Amino acid sequence: MIAKKVLLVGNFGVGKTSLIRRFVLNEFSEDYISTIGVRVSSKILKVDSTEIKLLIWDVAGTSDDEKVPKAYFMGSSAAMYVFDLSRQETYTNLEERLALVKQLSGLKEITLVGNKKDLLTEDELAVVLQSISTHIDLVTSAKEDDNVEDAFLALAKQSLN
Image (cartoon, rainbow, N blue to C red; front, side, top):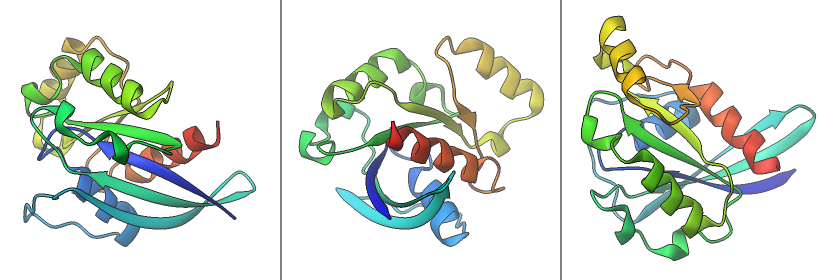
């Protein structure tokens, strides 16, 4: 088995911790508890025939990503940038935010995930997705357990590259 450090980054309140809780524990809570610093969770999964222990670093969200200590990014094999589909301020300047994560982590690819799709109607979701010029890898809902497993599987596959 191999262990891979992976990061979840993005603004505060976008659902990073909820995605991790859903993936690792299959739980969801409406309660919002802000992450301070970083919280590490782990889960073992299989990608093709490789068993991987994902060490998932839940990096505290900020309104200014530059305040995140560079040390959190060191040694990471993959990263997921999460934004809230229902809050425009979390997906403006995505290119700049992704470039910053790439610079801090040294990673060439970042998995981009739009979360909280359950808060939008199909029409609202279509409008939001059309307004974003950056390629979005997955649209998820931690609350409804929609595409959560797929998002972490994509992250695990990215960690192997």
